[in-house]
Image (cartoon, rainbow, N blue to C red; front, side, top):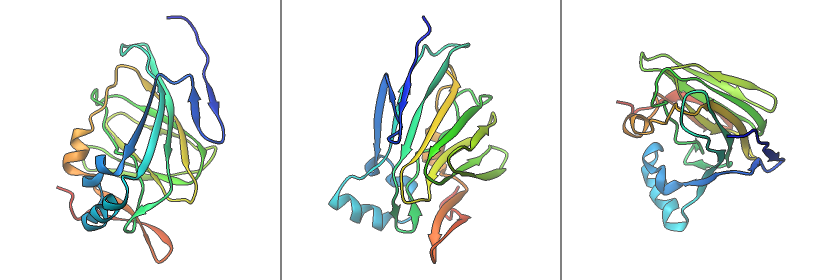
Length: 187
């Protein structure tokens, strides 16, 4: 592999060149939202684009890095903000860093031992997610929440644990304010 450069097109957050671009729609996230009736109602109208990822995929081996941008669009399902699917890393002892480029949001994090933490994301904030912590970006603002991420290339992603259990906490809007509440569906 040879050195290379990438450019992040701002304000859109698109990384070029990007080896992968994927869009996560509501249909792929419907089990993650609390209000299942609102999910079904919205899906009858449109399969909303909740977020997009642009990434460079380097060889998945020790010593390499994966990096890219995540763009969580503004919106809510019921009173719950649009969010990413969230994940642990397959190699649990792996960290990740996020740098907020645009928007306002929260990174919800939790570990298998039951600890949780929510960190505010605003432009210029650099967030370190330590090993063993699942993480999910949540857009609490009215414009795209754009973050740049980087993690070890061999880390992998464990989405299944979150799909099965969800996160312990939800981020909702109540009376015009952002609130963090217990997830009644958490198992």
